[in-house]
Length: 239
Image (cartoon, rainbow, N blue to C red; front, top):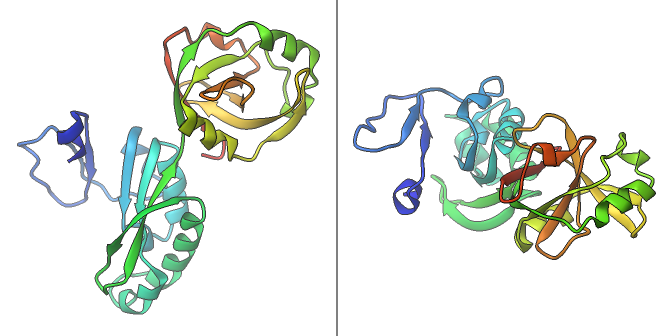
């Protein structure tokens, strides 16, 4: 439905044979595990619906999927279903409650679905990255970096930042992330460890700019890689 409604591209991951000849949807005929989750590829949105309680390595799969999308939609089996499920699903008794407690603690509940035992399963939205457009700065950051003490970042940042217009929702995403307090020439500021898709090396995000902007510090000159109008996806380093 996402592909049909929005004209995008889609992939279904299913170990059984599926006839998708009448669609433009790609079929990955595989069973996802921690050691092959990267084969799913990078997507704007990934749906993982009632799968983690089947997986002994659900933590590795969950971490891998977060690293490969901007938004992850998860349906979780409820711990109240364990007694019913453990007779038919290997490992359900050891995977259901840990995956439920871990994932629901960092996600936004957007609805509920009804499981086979009529227990309500939470439908969750996990934001994994922010996407923004490069804009020209005012040259203020170069002075701030030159005058500030950024030793806590673990590197000497290039004197300047990359400005991204991400919108208020994505800016708030980084505002809620744990970061380092660094005393710069402007104020005592929060710097979130991050990485940019398609670029090797770690960077830091700060929120000094306007209400729809973030700024990125790096040990290299990011303007050598990105120009005004380029779209850039940034995610916390833990994602």
